[in-house]
Length: 175
Image: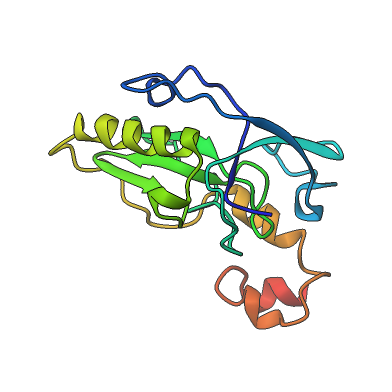
């Protein structure tokens, strides 16, 4: 399943104003791509994970806009919620902000959202309006340093080695 957010802190203003977001918490099986990882800054998770549905429909796609590596390294960026995703790692950003840009990782229209999801969506629009005219301070020049470790852990798992050409030199791949 996708179209859900991880249960995290509900203290951020977007969970409380102008509407109270009251999600229904569910225990889902932890996807295989979340398990057994030993990379820096990645949380270890058990066999079940607490999530809540932002959408009532299944889109077939994960609920994330980007990986979390380096996302909030800038003082004008924040991870608001992580999304349940079978392709990216645990903690991937479902809702984030860079300057005045709101990143929303869910695909459904408001009619396809849970009540909590609709309230969160409206609250996020109200929140991002407060950053009008505040362009992002930082622009991506390269990948976060943890990305190399994450990709190196995949070398024996990925069959198409061209996947790594943009990350590792030919000399390094040979080693």
